[in-house]
Length: 422
Image (cartoon, rainbow, N blue to C red; front, side, top):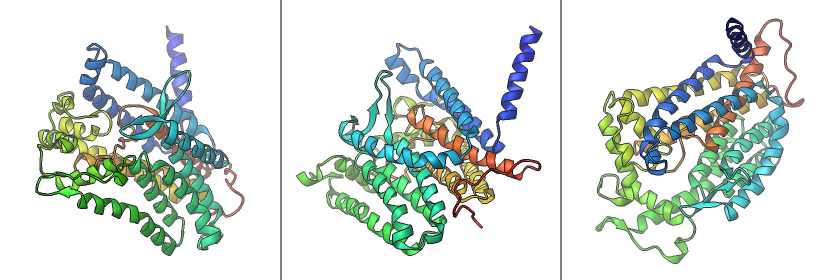
């Protein structure tokens, strides 16, 4: 008995010694994982009762499995020298393009949009935009690090960096406009930090804003204020998910105060949950709106957090994400090589901006999007790709830690040319 205990202790000691990187980020991951277990278990009670004959623990065990696999993904990906991600970035980017095209035409359809592909044999679905998002940020970090000497030039610097972003966003937008806008905004922010010309960025933003402004104008033009409902759209505006986007904009602009509207059912139920939560919440597992709010375990899980843990609990979760961003910025500032710095910052921007958008939707500060709350929403392919992103950030942090430690050999430069941030 004593020998087995000693073996387990030595195994944990060995694992701890091999776990490197920013310890605060590791702690934040654990906090979010624990919060995920509590809230997912609470919010999936009705779902489990409906589809699993009252066995409400099914989704709890499923979430435990996803968290266990996710932590393993973080651990093994953080042990990889981040220079390897520079080498595979182009391959993943080129692979994501045909996958997105296949998904667009042959993927699993939901609400007029095709976002998933079904994997053979294991019969599971995964969202190809998650892979494309990760691949793009990695590839963008690689390009920015290599183009620093010509980054202000339109043909040699801006176009080679901008074209991959445009390709990915255009392929994702027809089925998932919110994710495409998120990726575009994150990429623009990373390019701004990567010293891309402000004039070029402003011109791109102006061009990208044209379809968004068009969507808002159409939404306002085809809304009957007297009857508080959407007018019949012409046939040209009935293509794809355009009617869904128009309705969401209309609901956000006009129907936010009309709680009896079926079109605004989700956000109204979220408001009720937030109101019931108050300052300190109803307590763990005491949510009432989980039985009425659609997708309380994914898109609107932040509303359940506030209902059960109050505004204080919601503020704590927001603080955790902002602290995660702060620590990633710290890694960016300490990393001596451009690729690692851009990689850590770009991935952290993606995760934190997605979290802030999810929270903004739940409190009706942003139109309904469908993006999940990273590391807290119920597990799926998005959860695992989030874990991979965190593992890559920790890989950069681990190498920064090694270069700062006395007696350690400095890591080789990721790319021989234009890697220094000095």
